[in-house]
Amino acid sequence: TPAWLGSARLYKETAQYTQAMEDINRALGQQPTHEQALRLKTELQLTLRQWDRALETVDELASAHPEATGIAYLRGLSYLEKGALDKASSYAEKAMDESPKDAYTLLLAARIDLVQEAYDDALKALNKILRRQPNFSEGYHYRGIAYLKTGENRRARADFERALNQEEERPETLLTLGDIYLSEGEIIRAQQTYEKAIHRFPQNMEGYIRRGELYQEIQQYDSALADYDHVVASSPNVPSQVYLERGRTKVALKKYNLALVDFNQVLRRQPEDYMTYCERGHLYQLMGNFSKAEDDLTHAQRIAPTSPLPTYFLAAVHQEKDDLQQALEAINQAIDRDSTYALAYNRRGEIFVEMETFEGALRDFN
Image (cartoon, rainbow, N blue to C red; front, side, top):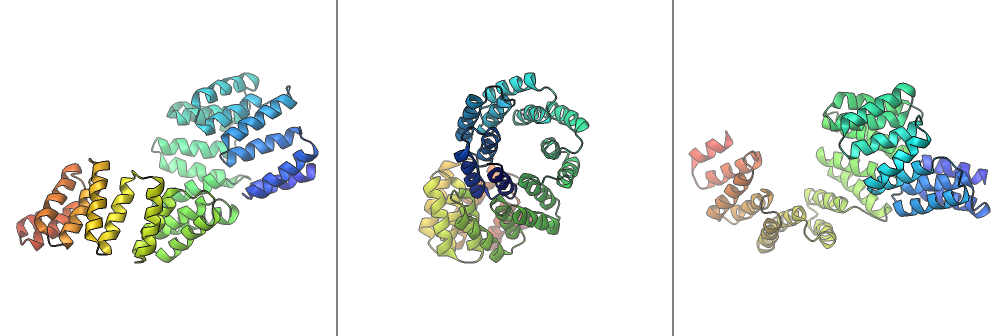
């Protein structure tokens, strides 16, 4: 059993979750009530977002070891990850009564504060934890999140970097730090950080997704497509957003028929996703199918009547059809819905040029 648990921990640390679970189950096959095996199984189930299974494993642990410590903490953590805040808070209070100075128990309470947007309380708790345990990687990670939520990006960045300087690396820390670098225009550092996450946690698909989004932003569409293809091929539960972004990438590469397949996949899952209707409508325009483009964009407008995007794209369709009056009416609707929409003013300026209304065009371009 110790050997199986040792290899399971190594697999878990490198995000090889299937192998980790297999070894945990082997250990439990030899000793069905082994306390550390049940604890590790709970942790892994939480990592895999198997909230209900994690709670079942905690029940097994409590039944087999009624005097074991940390049961309330594990239940609170499971309910927090599941999104059941009332139960999470209740068990967090019980955990605090049992172990008021335990760092992970204090961290659980701070995480609940973060979800409830009580950022000042979360920061107080996290500062207390880190004063006691200055090398606590998870403390820096979650304090970094608290700083992000309060707009203190420089402090957030410092905490995420400090979290990575500890012994334990977390994929969430690497990915969030990469996001910060990207938001600050440090493209190379962001790419390096995402690639470190991919190398360190090759089975965590978020690294490939984030790097794909970065490649899209810098217009390296072939590289972006390779990352999205890897996610689709490797993950049993591909998020709809991946199909949407892969479709957008294929549009940029002028692989229109393949992009259509991805947009259709999203709409089969989310039939009222107006953004995907906008993307598919724009794609139909590029393919020269103006009738289907108008159908999709009109439907998107019905789903999201306050969004400027459907009428912005609809204006482009009318403009390409040389129906300039309808194009002008549509783009005016987009501007009415969002008076700060710079692209809409630029498109209206182009429409005014085609209508030879140069004064209006100059006003919009300026």
